[in-house]
Amino acid sequence: MKNFQGGEMKRKVWLFVFIALVLISSVSTAQAARAIPASDETSTLLVGVSAYADGGLRARTDMVLCQGNEDLQDNPPLNQSGEGVNCIIYQERTMATSGSIYYEKDVEVDTGNQIDPANNLETYRYIDFSASSDGSPEGNMYSSESTTVTSMSTSANVDPESPSACCSWGVQSATVLPATNDQITAGSEVNLYEGQVISDSSARTTAASVEEPVELTYSIDVGPSAQTDEDHAQGSATAYVDADIMEGNGEGTAQTTDMGYDQKTTVRGMIDLAMDVSFSSGGS
Image 1 (spheres, helix red, strand yellow):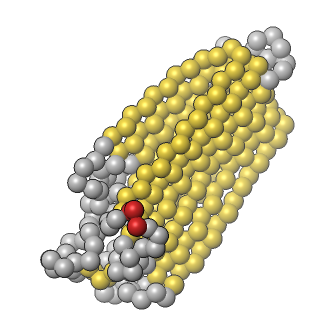
Image 2: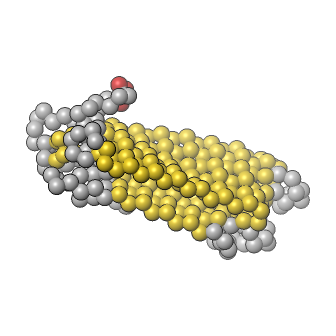
Image 3: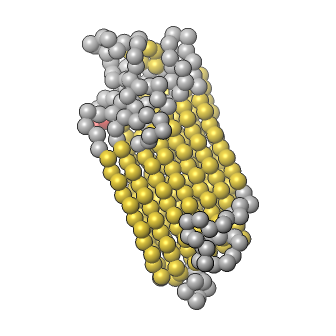
């Protein structure tokens, strides 16, 4: 039997996506999706799950973290004088029936200010499923997962030394911050009779300075189950990334950047699939 964490995995599909946004203003530093400073009180949540079942398993995770620089309770709409809200959304659903399944999950959430390479969200997931290992060919395992980052803010002319500054932005000098509205989602969906799934993701949206980029990463590997001698997984798998980027310029409402990106890859039968996604936004 192969080692569950280090089993050989032959890959037929490799997919890499990298998105980087840099906006430069002649007035001063300008950001695309930009980090928002943390609240006075912050918290950390750590969750670790390890499970085995010979028969069935269900697992569910829902996480939403939003950080704003004004009152979140009166949104929408955003204040037109520089209010911003950044959110991280993570979801996972796993259900296995009539087979042998190993399931591991680690989630770390930190609402405080982060400096690269630290993140507000870190996830790791390991699943190994075999419908035939219990002596019966019946059974299958379905699992879906997605990580999303959104960044929305109206334009602002911020002077950090002014006591009447409209909002709390992490800036060091007088700065014009244009409006932004970005949403990036990366995820996967598998339906397997035999196979192994390893995935991880990270996201950063909260930082003490707008110089710190908003980032999202997501990776997934689908390969053969470590419980069998097969060279490939059996079933179907999909990996996808969806991005909508809208940016302004200066203090007005003019939109000067508009980008949409939508990609999906699906394999069926005897399969292997791998995808890496990296999104980073900001510049100077």
